[in-house]
Length: 227
Image 1 (cartoon, rainbow, N blue to C red):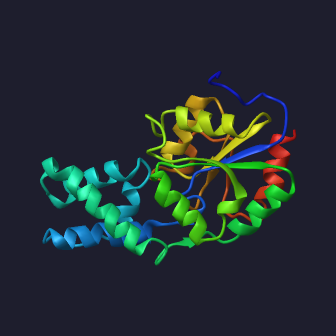
Image 2: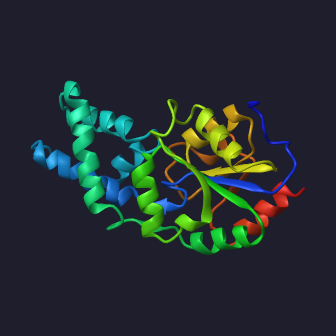
């Protein structure tokens, strides 16, 4: 498969990131991290700190937590497993869809778009989150952080999802530096959701357009892909 697949003709393909783009999941992730830290006798981390760690998958996030809390990095795998266990216990309890997400997904599907998800969250919890919020049926293809040998910002996961959606103009929508880099490396246009978890200013990230709510997104996507 060619690296740059943005010019193929056919049905619209719209691919989303998950955490920080469709779902505000940082409160659940923070709860899981702090449950592990409590077991380690460490003080909890605030929401802003944990949010800043999101984007490169759970193992990377836990590595940053270990450094922040001065824990033993040799125990990384065990602590990652414990955070995952805590996350599975609380998943969905504190998270929420961003306003207008369900309606935007429904409108895109009704307009003939094929939807995909490309996330660094492991595939099983990603599918669980989609199901919990009743949006799993909108997606025709999904790749998680453990689905392939590579994860974002490597372009392979994004290219894989795009290929699974068939042919047609394609657009990736995400919220972070990782998403912007992944889209650039895949040669795909990128829409940046400014309400997510990025750590740098909007103007410093590669993007084709910026949106701050989902109400007007379907029309924006159609205008971009059908131009």
